[in-house]
Amino acid sequence: QVQLVESGGGSVQAGQSLRLSCAASEFPVRSGCMAWFRRPLGKERERVATIDRYGDTTYTDSVKGRFTISRDSDKNTLYLQMNSLKPEDTAMYYCAADWSFNHCDRVILAFWGQGTQVTVSS
Image 1: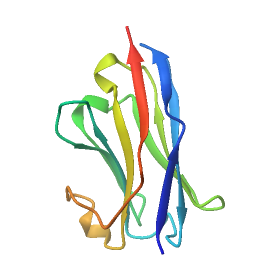
Image 2: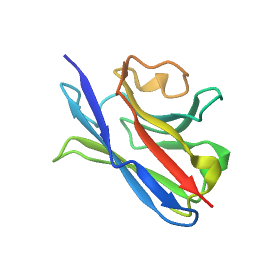
Image 3: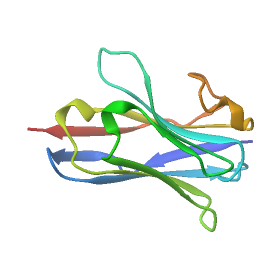
Image 4: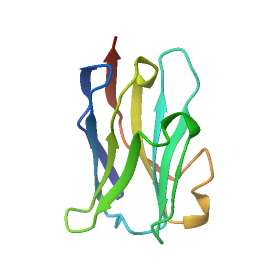
């Protein structure tokens, strides 16, 4: 059974950094598509970053140049390095995965983690 477990969230000041981790079970991180989504309180969920089986990445405009999605196959873990954090980045962050690499541009992926909270204060 595929399981995704996020960690690394927390409360930080604006301008600081966090690295989120997503430990994957029964899903090789170099398979299909893996992604980070976030849902700010009271707002809709948005796709933050994706990485497919070929290593191609995408980012939502608001995080380009600040966030980096990556993976470690030895640890079978997906990461989201978040630099220069802004209060607008405050949200619940979710790891997601799908066996189909061409689903990286979809809103809904097959598997989801439980989320980790990121809070950025000014």
